[in-house]
Image (cartoon, rainbow, N blue to C red; front, side, top):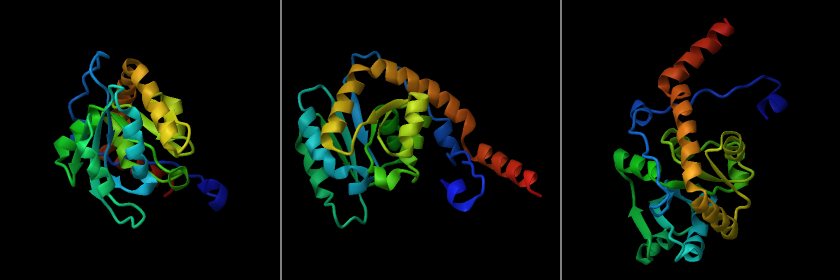
Length: 216
């Protein structure tokens, strides 16, 4: 896209992951017998699919799927985060209000299937720290069709693509992930190992140095 509009060849630098993320304990491989946990972490904004969660939770009731929802309120006048806080009374739903310690956050991401059902128009080219963290922590991700993450997941196999930005499509994808969880987790572990070797501050600095030396 940049080359088309600017006329300059562009590339993507390694993700600036902190060392503690890169060295975090590897996710234990699932046996397929434990309940699958779907996590939604980060800012509670409409563009991040927050408004879809009540219907998703309702539709997944009784399926054996558990949810972990972090409610970190952000400036989005179109969405009331109290809607998510109210889900804490639902069976199989755990809600965390506000910020988390880094270790608790990494635990939540690493030990779940990460729901990244973002609005395609907002995230076609926009980055997602949660997606990078899930990849680096060997965790499967469910991403929306039309986002740049769709291209990544379809290439690497570390998750599934949600067909549309709707509750119906998200529920269908969650059910598919539940059926395919052992294979998804194994793929995410393979992708995570490769990602940890390619990303981080040191790799980013190497890429900067290489780019600068190529254009004195």
